[in-house]
Image (cartoon, rainbow, N blue to C red; front, side, top):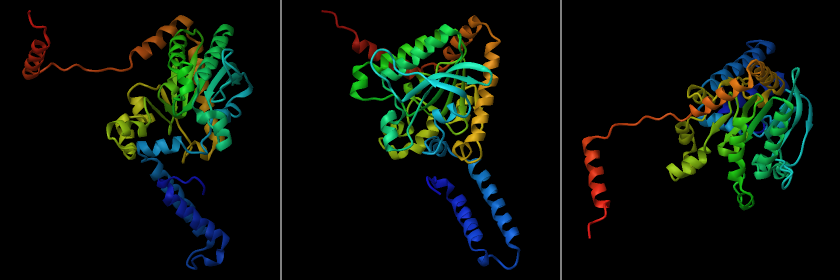
Length: 342
């Protein structure tokens, strides 16, 4: 099997055994029938899958989120949505193909859908810039969101990016400003907004289209201020400590839900979204529709107040009373720093 992940090795071994048995039935055990032996192996494969995928580490889930066969935004636009009509350009600089967006239908609702898009092969990844948007990508997204707000269309964003593009050109065209403007403007849009993290949710590149009334995440996706490798390089001075960083960052869906950073986890088929696109699309469509219909029942004012409160509630911290030794050290430092009288 191509693109096999390391923790899937026991499954691969059983599948290879099953394939060998079916291709060479004369090699099967004489103690039991061929059909029964096949059934036993198939049952063992299912049991092994359930055992492995119910005990995944945070780093294992990052690997699944990055799986090259994982469904991307355009895959869902053609399965979970209907009638997608793509719109291009930011009307300021250029077309950024790392961000796709346009009109579509979700169930019986007309919506504006926007998402980050990766490529399947080298040629497409170059075209899509590996899913890392330039400033014009975020400005295009904002243009489409403002259009949706003007015409009263709900906005749905699909997030799958390792982060915004950090190159010189992006800096020259003010990538940080483009993302910051999106954060401000998305907080003020009056139409319902739903964001779904479908794969990687990296840093400001994800947050640039992630301000929403409801934030959903697929079971094996992740959402983080930095990649595990980047965190490991900073804290442990070693990118090989990425697995340790993934745990410390609490970037997997279960941790994010517990922390209140996402509103719901969308279950994936056993083995990951890439194993069954049809089922995964049905799950995504059902959850998006349920949240959209709830949001449509609220007034614009209620949505805006709730959205603002939602993001203001992020980032709780506790302050500790300083010990007597710490208080003394602070006073000593203050005296030393104070200007001396002439």
